[in-house]
Image 1 (tube, rainbow, N blue to C red):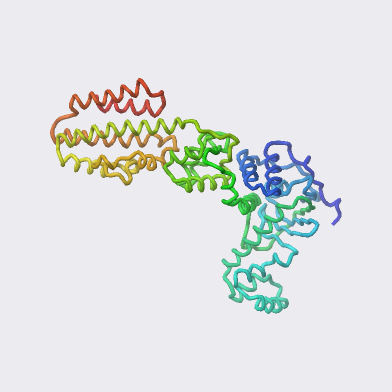
Image 2: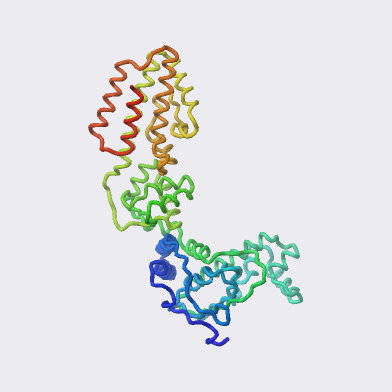
Length: 448
C-alpha cells in the first residue's frame, strides 16, 4: 500500500480542546505507569461528553489514514474509528512488535499479534485445557483445516464456546494494554467490509479503561496515603454530574462518594460513615479506579461542619425520643414499652431503615453510631436527606396517638415545656441550616 493512499494524521488533525488534551495526558500518564493520573484524565474527558466527528476527507469514498504515535496518540486514532462507527483493519508497528486490529461498526472484535507467546495456544496451555504436547498434535491436524485454533477446539469439544470467549477477551485486553504503552510506532487504518464473526466485541474506550485498571492496584494506591489526614476531591465538576454518578454506584460506595468534597480528610470520612479504616480506604480505591475522585494536594484537620450538625440533630431527636418514651412508661408502665415496640414495627420500610438493629422499647439501645450508619444509605440523596428526621417524627406521632387512645390524654404540660426548651435552644444557638429548619418546624407542629 502506498502512503499516498492514506491521509496523514497529526495532532493538528484534531481540535485543540480540553477533551483531546485529557486523552493525550491520559495516554502519557499510562505510558509512564502513573495509572492513577491516567484514570483521572480519562474520567475528566468522559465528563465533557465530546462526540463531534473529526473532519477527515475520504479517499475513493472510504476512510484511510496513517500516522505515528509521537504526533498522534493511540486514543486519537481510536476516537475517529469509534465516532464514525467504522469497520476495517488497522496495522500498528513498533520497533519489535506488530498488531492487527479488526474493527466492526467502531468496535474492536479481534487483535492479532506476531509474537508466539501471545497466541491463543499459550492461553489454552495456561488454562490447562491442553498440554503443550496435545496442543502440538492439534496444530498439526489443524493445518489440514481452514479454521482458527479456538474454533477447532470448540468443535472437537476440548472446551466450550464460553471458555473460548473468556480466553479471547483476556488475550484482547492484554494486547490492547501493551499497544497503549507504545511511545513510538506507526499505524495505518483502512475502511473495508468486515464479515467475520467474533465471540467478543469491545468499544475502544472500554478497553482503555480495562488497560488502565490492570495497572492501578490497591498496594500502589495505599502507598499514596501516608496518613488519614489526606483529602480526596471529586473529579466530576457539576453537582448534576455527581448526582448522576451517585445513583450508578453500589449502596456501600454512595455515602463515601457523597462525603468526598475536597475538605474532609480520611479520618473524618471514617467518623461520619461509621465504617472502619480498611473499608473506607477500600471504597476510596474503588472510587479512584472509577475515575470519580482524586487525591487533593492539601491536608486538613479542621472540623467537619456537616457531621457536627447531623450529630447534633440526632442528639436532639434522641432527647425528644427519651421524653416521649418516658411519657409512655410513666403513664402505662411496662405496657408503654409494648406500645413502643408496636410503633416501631408499624413504620413504613423507608423509616424502619433508620432504626435497623435498634429496639426502640429499650432506650439504652438507641446509639448515635448505629443511627449514623443506618442513615448513610439515604443521606446522599437530596430527596431522602430528611428521612431520618421524618422517621423520628413518625415515632413520636404514633406513640402519642397511642397514648391518647389508651388514656384519652395528650402530652403533659411539663413534658411540652421540656420539648419547648430543647426547640428554643436549637433556634437560639444552632446555625441556620435546612436540616435544622425542617426539624424545628415539624417539632413545633407536633406539640401544638
